[in-house]
Length: 153
Image 1 (spheres, helix red, strand yellow):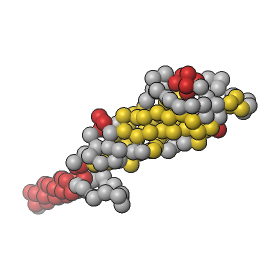
Image 2: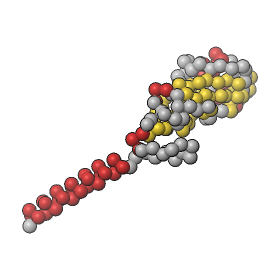
Image 3: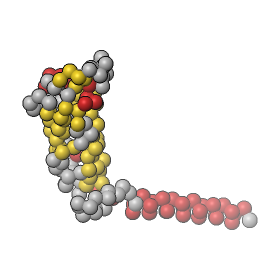
Image 4: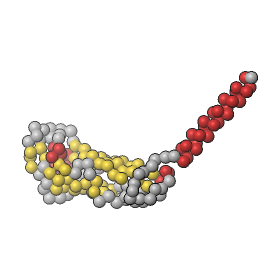
């Protein structure tokens, strides 16, 4: 009787391991993307980064600023789904980006880069509008946190 129980336990354990292996092989991340052709789960890649406060190169005239974010290291074979968030240096000017549009919008996404375009004005800690951000201000105050999900094969 105890031999049958031990044998039954081993069989159940093997069955659990087999189900886990089959599930991990055939199931995986899925991208619901109407623009592309679905690919196998092993081709799905999540890649994330930050451009760095003080190292993000902003360009543009006055109240319109932009930066291009390089994601070529992710190895995407088509444009991924990109989400962004503008990160702000924590100091007396925190909240300065609250009058900027585009702080969570990736533009012109390709498999190797995307653009962030900010339009608006900055304000101080007391919510007083200070005018258009300068390039020096943007480079010392803001960076881009990003996450991209796409296919690598």
